[in-house]
Image (cartoon, rainbow, N blue to C red; front, side, top):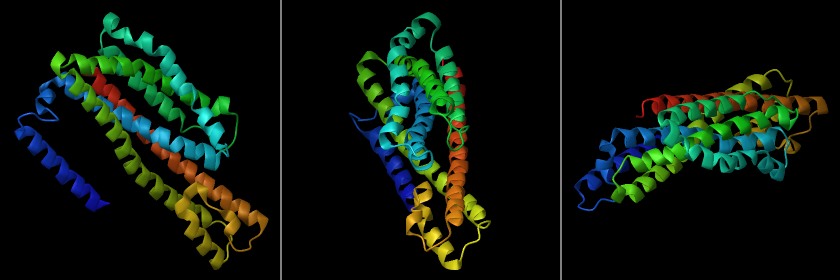
Length: 273
């Protein structure tokens, strides 16, 4: 992993050097002289990093821990795009009425609340009282943010650079999600591993059963207990509970980390004029 990060860092530096010297650069670095453009892209980086983590890990929780079907897990997230679709036109008019600072501060802050709400559910319970509030609040926060953010990015550059500015902002959003999944994925795995081993220490298992379980741990909550050596039903249930509880603990850490990113995005939004 460290090697890949080093290669990526070197490649980024080389890209900046080449683009600075190019006569017709693919990435005009002069655009970043605009404070508004730079801050808008920083906000995009932080907020879409948080969103990428949610869209990647929440379905894992729903399917592997909450025992939703794949179809039900997809349907559980459906209110998010619906809210954004319904409110996009309204939020697009906010800039003309109140400017960019308020929606780019309030929107990410509301999104942060939605992300924090994902850390609340345990195992089981009604979707409407567990995950639905988080989906709705996150969707509302993103709906307030996205259209004003796009307007801010496009308005921060000359008309001739509008297409390039839009492309850069979209690229930042996509890269943010990928990087966040990689980084928070490591956090999730290490937190899960530490906590599940601690919980398994409380379960009376034979050495062979413990070894077999530990081989399955890289699958996290997707561990296949049916392939384990013969153990009592009570022990099997205890192992299942240990795995699920450890995954939820790690999931909560990651969701709160994502909420912190969204709050940082709100702070950046408050600095945009």
